[in-house]
Length: 227
Image 1: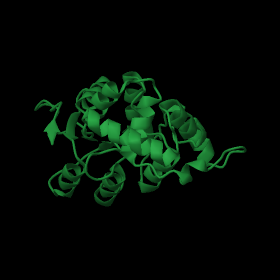
Image 2: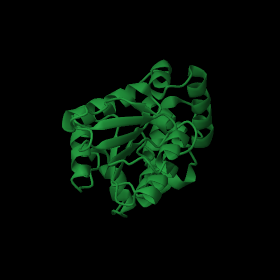
Image 3: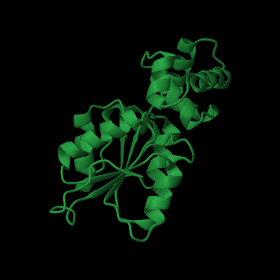
């Protein structure tokens, strides 16, 4: 666990403690800047694995006022971290910040206890506003998730095709980034993994989606509501 923005002694007692569970340093910094823009006196504590976050939550000496959790963690899933927050701090708000906007991921996060769901592609200003909103008791949702939420609500014409594809969170994250036109190298950098890992994810995606090209895989995933 790494403290990114420790509070000064004068504000330590009143400062909010915000737990960020995210393994990518680029996104850690983005989230820390978004927090600082709306909660400058807060203390940001970063865990880069789910197990480290759970260890922190199980320490009786620790407290948090907000948890920001990525779903695609390298060890255990972000959903388990959300549940761990709920077990220890029933009233502390949890917000998902993820590149994953698949139907099943959104629904699972909400069922586990998330009160907000923001995509990493959103601006720092939008993320900062969402953090402020959730601390005020609101339930911020990224506008780009509206289509998925309408599907979950059973809007007319919505299809539930995503259940036929069993993609892992990392595979979904890879697909999400590829759909933005990024190269394999750029995807690897954003995910914080080796290029070979991205290539393995892509082979798995082609097999699971029965696709022969990247364009075909992205099109099938969009039709199924995966991205």
